[in-house]
Length: 222
Ligand code: FES
Image (cartoon, rainbow, N blue to C red; front, side, top):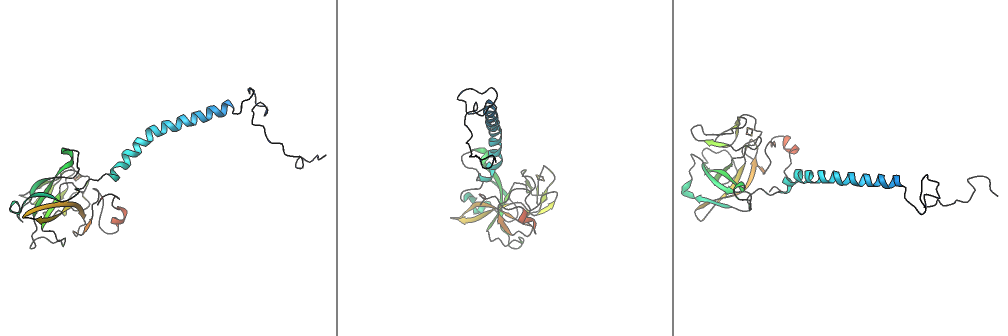
């Protein structure tokens, strides 16, 4: 007979709590009440956390997958509507199926090779009204040839470059083309301080120097 505990044959532990000598155990019970209530409390806590957490997560991540750009080119008027000296405000749709909130104003003028310094190659300049600081709508003032943001004093020049205030990059633009004697406005894009073209970025995203690597574009923004 082996006296060394290590040499004694191993007896499997009973699944019944009564056999395991648990105080207050019932005949045939396999899960202690403490374990049952602990599991129940954890499950209830998990459900409560999910009830609060999932909607918040959806709210936070939803905009990443939301498309806010025109699907295609939109007609904004005949060529005769535009000239190189001033901008003409036009309404375009950037969010389909949501009515008025999906519309935005875009300032359009004819490209002027003698004045414009960009090499973007578009025949018309279409400037977004969304301020590159925090997104307030800017307004074009012809007398000053400036775009003015009412929120924090952002000022942009005639070509949309930052002339003062907190904006971190020029105003966004839209692609343009001519078709059958009419001006069409297409997808939005962003530009850096040299008016180099980038995929559309959100307001406050820098696009110059190393900063542009800290502000990658959203996956679904064209
Ligand atoms: S949102 Fe335009 S300056 Fe702040």
